Length: 100
Image 1: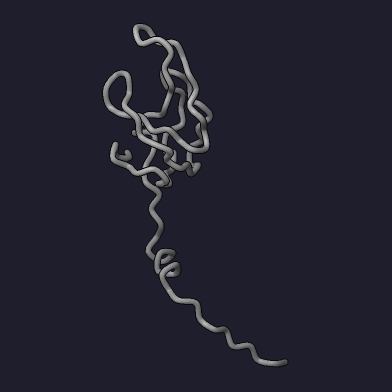
Image 2 (image 1 turned 60 degrees about the vertical axis):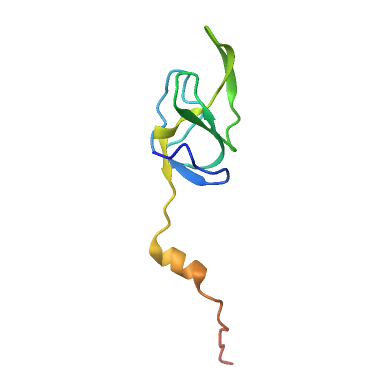
């Protein structure tokens, strides 16, 4: 599960895409999404609003029209393997090519 303190721009992966109280909203399990913001939920806690899926609205008594985000438990942080992180940190090297 991601944290309520997750900053905007963080990439997360969907681990649970089943329909919730307001439907699935188009989530795909295993897809990578970008956090637009974390917002307070009407029932307490927090929801995540994603850059790739605009929030939709629904009428929910007694609050009225509310924007729908996704439960934090549906996502986890995207962890890159150390081997890929090391490649990103290495300086580019000149490649020597032999003439044929």
